[in-house]
Length: 429
Image (tube, rainbow, N blue to C red; front, side, top):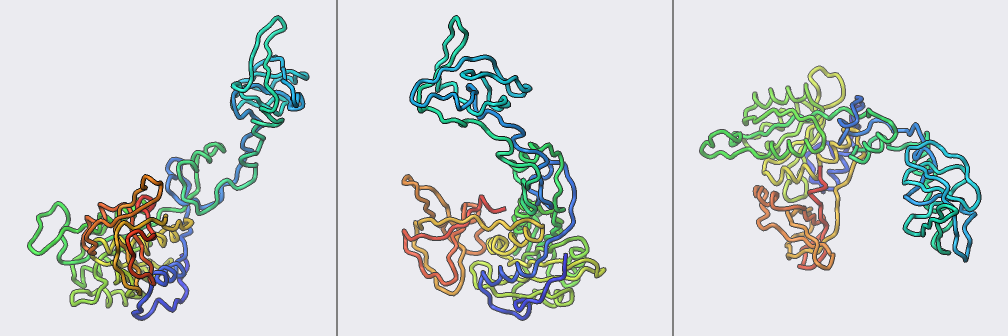
């Protein structure tokens, strides 16, 4: 990775809008360049590193788009019934056949090569077949077909030498099928982004352990690990870190020596037990932002130096400790940044407009993310209702929701029935 350029938002302790924070992050980052070649089925969800250029025409020959009868379009009788003698059959995968004469046709199957001189296929359901002393015939009424119909031309889908897929694309099932249709068995992709993940706080216990008095189970690491896995990242789980300078220093040193990105939750607010600021000032140029948003106001971002000084920076995303705030800030800031760092074309949040079932109180001057349940009403329109309590620690509200209601920075209160912007959870990776 290249060294980041200077940014006016990377210093100090500014109050930023969500849009400003997103823009500052995007401007600072440079994608990784390391690639690897993997078997096609292992490329699912990976970012393509080079353009895929088609080595062949697709389809490789003119062929029939359906089962029917192939003939020369010039044999159509405009306003009269067209009658054609059936002189043979062409099967998919068979070789070429000899040319046929005027007013003759061939029974042909979907995908079969169009014989020379033939350019039209009549679907079998649009014609009548009869058998007589002179052989088999088909007839079709006038105006049911135009010359050239139901023929797929060579290279119609993709021409040899043209790009089939562009670098940066996150490969999906259909993309792998497309590459297989070109005869490919491997894909050149960017290596997986390595993300070191840990949670901080003396009050945290790991799930499965006895819950000590005054403590809570750490849910952030599990939620964030799942979100990182869906993004295709290689996750380095560094566990729970107590609020002790020595422990935090050791964990950060391990993280920057092994990863491209460090993702933490907790320890980014101002408090007596938060040692993060002083330590990060020694390791890099991390900026602590107060983002005008709810939930998730405290957030830290910036480059950390590797211990050996080699390579580019390791990027820190320090998220709030409250479970909902951690996930919301991940979706708002880290998700697209990780796609960018991993060499992928950034895929914006899947967004739609929906009618709010509830009246929502809000003051202008910050972006708010409310948890909601989106559904399609009987009239075909989309509506969204809130899940209830919207506190930053109510993780159940995120579990019950299938979307985030996003109320913009300058937006005020919303009356029931008014449209709102919605981010879809099912589209978030």
